[in-house]
Image 1 (cartoon, rainbow, N blue to C red):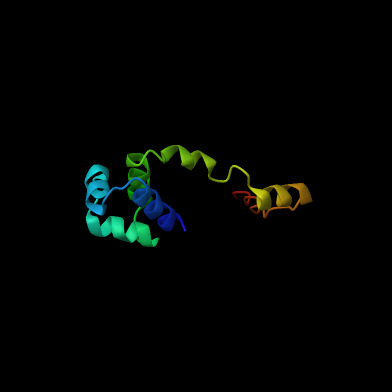
Image 2 (image 1 turned 90 degrees about the vertical axis):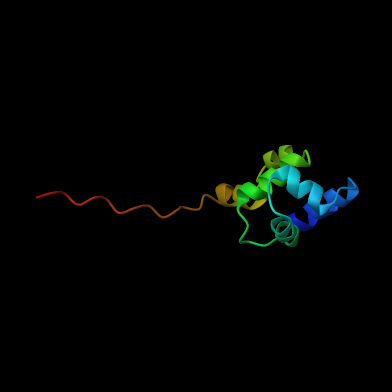
Amino acid sequence: MLGENIKLARLRRGLSLEQIAERAGVGRSTLIKIEKGDESVSLGSYIQVLFVMKLDKDLLKVAKDDVLGRKIQDAGLVTKQRAPRRAKN
């Protein structure tokens, strides 16, 4: 999904794979992988591409409205805690 959105943003801007790859400092093949959502590509490469296309501010929206997290918090679910440390002899 993220890769598809990046590709659509690139196409809307009328930019080629080569232009974005060069500006982001990644290889053309890496950009193709990004647009396909390949999990082997580093997050840094994704961020560089987003920065080049002036979409880096969209990263601030990640987990902004965390519906599931809020439901869990509201339900008061207890998270696992570590066992207490053993006393040293």
